Image 1 (tube, rainbow, N blue to C red):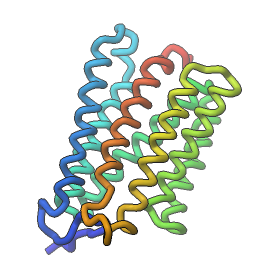
Image 2 (cartoon, rainbow, N blue to C red):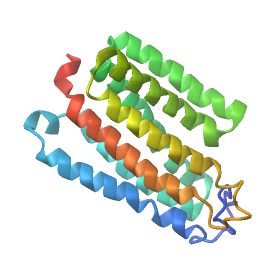
Image 3 (cartoon, rainbow, N blue to C red):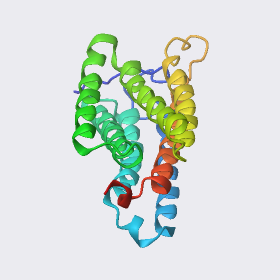
Length: 217
């Protein structure tokens, strides 16, 4: 029998429905993905033929499904179904932001991604997964958004910075889930899902509006 993974306040046993709020709140990702599909279909033919944007939207759905699986089954394979789509979205979005918004050469983009990937792998080993991995993503959003807004006057800069603020709030609520468990038995992790659905939606919409495929040429 598989040993269940108990790392959230709401879970009190191995049962499938032991995290109802954490599980159901993943519907926010499905809603975000659906809204993105609607927006995607309303765009011109150039954007609709952009596989990178389609991949971002697909990953939003995968994140919702994977997280839902983890907060119900709570075993190793479902944890991988949760974290792999998240990591894929972070890396793909960072590449697109550097290539299409910051307009860096391909080699520079790949080098930065390798550094980020190394940090994503190394920091959890040193500081624990829950905060450090996402702290890398938050730092990247602030740096890219700040550079675009304050140095370039790029219209994508401010939306990315605002979204970074939402993500910082989301990360804070994720972090206090276990410390507040005694006074708030249902935890705060479900807020992480709802706010992150907003984060993924606005990041993807920003890329749809300002990171068209032609600008990377």
